[in-house]
Length: 107
Length: 229
Image (cartoon, rainbow over all chains, first blue to last red; front, side, top):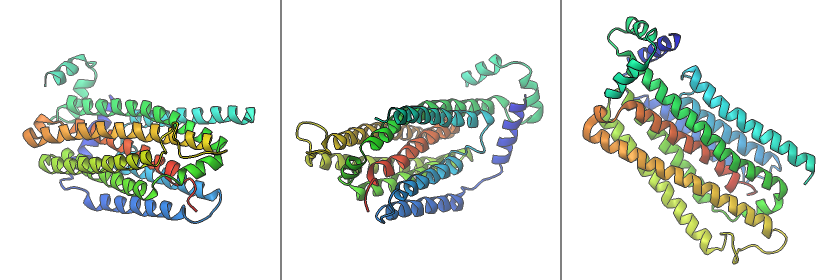
């Protein structure tokens, strides 16, 4: 019942907007291009292990921009956010437990 | 139409009157079905996250085991083509996101054009990727008997290129499916408008497209930027 109500509220909120959100999408595009230039440029600067940290931090920021502004993950229902979070949670388990195994063996 | 009616009957009766009272002019069922459809796509994308996640873990574990070989092998990938392709794919996500917005406010023709732009960018990506594959093949970077690397780094470098071809290959396959889906929907939209091609399906195609973009966002630094300085 509450799910139906919140869905109704969401569509009511979206309905009145009659034009395309060109400006906000242009801003996100510029941000994505700037981050791409930053990650590509920084890889040619010797920063040691910091290179990999910068590269994957920027990748995570780019992914977050796509998730929030294009996939509307924050605007979606709770079920959608749970599904998205479940994927990341199990991915976290996969990486954490498998790496513990690798480190414990000391290959 | 018939499916919407069928699902309305299958729904518990408690929900229908409340929704009808809430929005008398708006049919409750299509709205609800839309939410359900998007949830279904998100669940599918969760399984896809773990599918690619396993490949990313293989990458991380092998890079951890062979850091020098991964650095040397990654320098043989074409960083210019990789960067250009990242820009192409990120731009295609913007046109796809705008197509979804256009479909949601009932602008079928604009949505169809934006989807055509999206699939064109997808094809550009695949063409560049195909050319990169061709060059890597001629440079003997495809794992096998004539593999480019010899000496102590050969094993690790070959592992890198196995992972490179498997991950980018599965990514390209996903993108090719996306191109087909978006193209089919754009065609139906151009012919019959939003009555022929529902906005809810376009939302789902958009979610899938953006997911494939996110996979590439992580593949790009993982494969092209290991050691450039």
